[in-house]
Length: 268
Length: 323
Image (cartoon, rainbow over all chains, first blue to last red; front, side, top):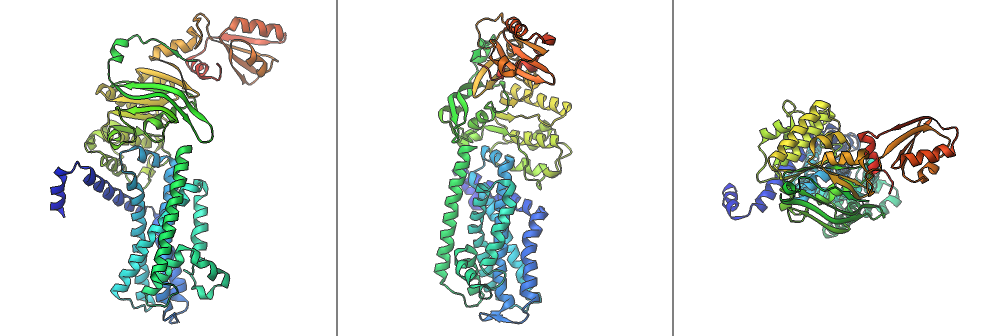
């Protein structure tokens, strides 16, 4: 790895290796910043952990759902919940604050590659998603008699990480469309109802019929089905279907975020 | 309404290469507001230029255009002969903006090093710390800094790339007198090393102390341009901006009068009317005529006082909504 980069450096104009170095630096400091910001790190890790302990471990002890232990089934749901929280609050609130404070403008005026800013925030959300899945898994194994193969863990961690991408795009839409003063409130109004309506807290079959009908509109629903299926539970829909739904959602969010950003740029 | 004074040191200043220019730039926002109206200005190598003007004059818009953060509706922006949005251009510019909040949980040292990382040949870390006066606060989180320390850190970020052209938007806001003078010294030494500095400011004193050239803008147009001495003499009553008769001196008439502001503003020569408590303050380029008219119309007029405007008043007069 190091020999490759050494060989590359003199031949390239420094453009690519320079960008790569800036990206790595930006990601490192964004992660550090998020970890140090207790209000963010404790809440995004603590909320899913607390909910999982309450609904997944203390209640419904030893019961099964769709072929697996409730504690194992809900591990998938709360992993999605965690990924959504890290993304909505990390990107949505983070970018919104940078935007209103003028920090984003200073970054854009610098020679930093513009993508480095967004990607570092997205990578931060991915990192937090993986941390949350790991914490939930440890809780499940220690206190909920959850048995998980390494492959299963790898799959749900990978899904949580991948899920942070569409959710980050949703966060970007929030940051560019909602005024910063109300961003926190709106973020919660998206975060909590979306989690509930897609059956992340309480499995859908125990929820009113109306909610079961609207659940497939949410991206969290599709990611959750992929989680349940990879944990050995029966889940409706095909893998391809869920993946395409998530991809479609991501593209729509990127489109809206791009339009909102351009509009903002012209008006600023 | 543009009065450009001939520069006395034409020979020395025009020979220096132009590093940045706005040519006939108009910026109209989507909501119809015209922020810049055919504005032209140029910055030459090694000079400190102060962009002076009231809020909403278009200072920030001009800076944003030169930083490539927004595009002009018409006209052209050239920085080092290139597009301000090119990375190659950005590598040679440094910016200090009025930033309310930088990421608070990063240390001053980390912020500086992140920005240094953007440039292939950054200014040495120790030099930035010394120039921006960051000794002793390098390990503090940005969120823990006082207002002045935050400003100095942001100044440090502007220096990070050892840029040839530096934009400073209200750089000394929130600094105490000592820190302000310290930053002035740094800005002067940058210019002495051949760097070009454009600063926007509300403080006449700052423009006066620092700038080789002051450009006063209002409503998106250049009102006047010249050395600090020239702009001062122009504003302080030597002549009315835009008028061909330099004998007409601006004066401020203060009195208690029953005449309404609208009525006063309609009088010839009156550029500005302001109510201060029970007194009315009238700025006029034809004070004798204005007074004669006022005295004829208002027999109860009393507490009369006529003064030459102070520097601040002169600046206000130059940029007030007259013309």
